Length: 587
Image 1 (cartoon, rainbow, N blue to C red):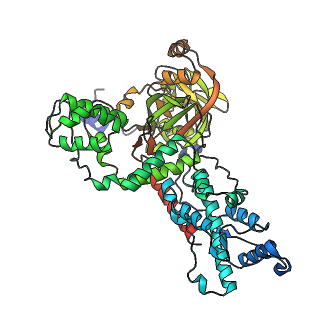
Image 2: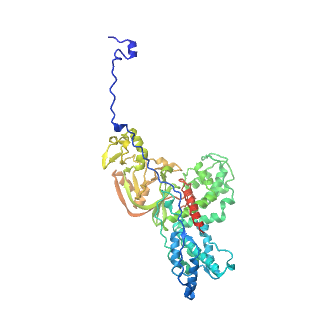
């Protein structure tokens, strides 16, 4: 029978008789909500908790009057010390107690008052600012009106000075050796074994030392980097050059290319004069002398700016944009001093001698350096962790170079980035060519229930698309950080290169691999050309410093300044404040 148009619109002649299709039966477990994604959290920055000072406990002698001569004087001093209150951090307090409770003679005072040696020690501590320390942390108060006191009160007041000065000197020795701060209390991104400082013999050494100031200076880190930072700090503190001349002002968002012209060019050249190195200004002395304030960006001025950009770690293309301008207007004199103080503190966390051979990665500079025979032999651009995936601050030993590497995907990337996609498309990793292992056996990603958050291992096989490129340089650590190649070469053209998930990408990985292996780039090329995944031990392990310095000397000793890309300087500054408050509250 023919079907009319109206019947079609109504669903056909059998519409009223048609039965609804049977409902799909869904297993109860599939009706439940999937397990929520548990994000793998990044390390945290902490509210710094300074070490609490404790009371120094000097034991009173049982019968101080029963002895004579020098022993009598020491016993009287010990009795007076037992009756005053002086506080110090535990290691310092213990060393002070060990000296005076073992009949140590007073070093800094006598019945006549504070000795010349004591005053020299106080003066030396007052100069702590010159080495990046806080003078207030080591200040000793001498009570007024000593001459008008009775004998017992005078002795107690002097013995309080004796104890306090000894404690402050030991605190200084400890601070200048290992730093004021415990870096691991600043954030989870800091990873250092804090140096142990033997204080037990220091007071005996100070007692016999003819020059306390020289002894204290001798405890500073003895490396050329610290010396360069100290010299720069002294220059800024004494000359305060930036306050003596007008600050450089350049209109924001200025963009000037070679051959162009700009009303801001005189200000830019003023910036080069203010912040360029002496060697740069000597090399381009004729250009600077001949420049009379014109607005045309001539080839001679382009060459000057290119030299300036190169020494500041920028792309030396002569194009003046925000990155170049920021180096001229971004850091005031006060900011530079703060950066130097923080850099000197951080350098105290590292070995006193960095060694004759090492790799030094400075994250704020976005550069890595290879030092051999104490000379910089290699420098290259790097990409470090983005602010949400920060690279850690630590040291380790370079051990292995792996050619044609697999990329073991970190758990944080699997959970935070892959799993949301896998819940929508379980075959996501299969299509990308990644290998998935579950409970020790290889599986296809499509076989797993990603709603249940399976604990899996994921790796990317060697290929031209591998995230690690052709090689990686390993220094095993708890943070899964290493140096490696990358297919994303365009990132190295950027001035701001905090772009990775935390590892350090090298602009010239084959050159660095040849350096750490002690071989040639041709040999590295042959290893890669084999196509085989192969890990090779370096002939000799040596240090790598994955560091964070916003002030650091270049190979010529000139200090360069960098932006605080992770705001770690701010966290360190707050830790300084907390430490000084805890110390000075007990003074």
